[in-house]
Length: 358
Image 1 (tube, rainbow, N blue to C red):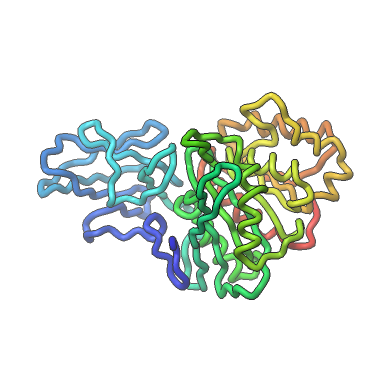
Image 2: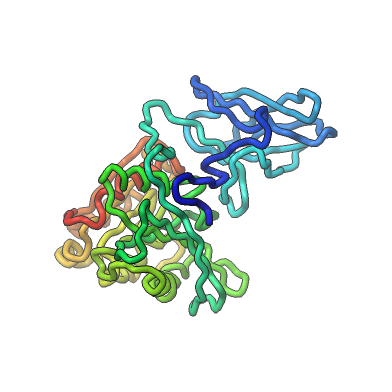
């Protein structure tokens, strides 16, 4: 179990340093203060962000290295370098990104209302399940968010929520804090109580990653498993899918290929097109604008204004305009990162499983 009812104890979202003087502190001026325990023989310790910024820590003796610096607001994956060797620090939050366990820091953005932070309201649980796959011929797993006051005798709608390239099923919990976003919105009455299923889209076939096969795994294995393990509403108007980056591509393929299964789609910082293949059979669903409107109550597309993939978003805009199809379109300040994807989820959740139209 990653979370427990009442209070979440996940390392990455409720991090408490082992010792009072170790870990990360977020200061009011946007700077961060970091204190790490490092082996005594270290000569140099630094923190390197994915954007190339690097900050040197100072040794204080007694194995403690510290520093205060300004990484910029928002979420940052970070490597701790000890004498130029990457190490995973147990004193900083840990997620899975860049195809490996990795530290991160998450600097609060001024003016945000804390929509992804835990509050004093009721909390749901995140449970790991295992199931056999006919696609991979292996035992696969998924995480399932159960809402506050979960009642196993009650039938719930289901959102299938996917991560991006190089991440896994834990991303939306550890980095995205989806469980806290859901807790708040369900408690406030903004979102319908639902189950949320998170799987690894980095599917392996006989030990080799296959980033394209997840939609098949979802339809053939994941949905049948969930609908056998839980009381759920099984019609398309109570089944939604959303994903970020690579997960948005999986969402486009699955939802457009199977309008009989999905009534809602969320494309976060992502793509209608398949980026890695020439053939695009799922886009045939765009050829009939009237059928598209009947098939999807919500088709939500969103992107950060500074996203490096923004030109792809514009290409999809042009395709939809050519086909005469309207979707719900949102832009956010930010790039291809979690500060945008959290907002996407926040705005998508209140729209689904309701009598809404595009």
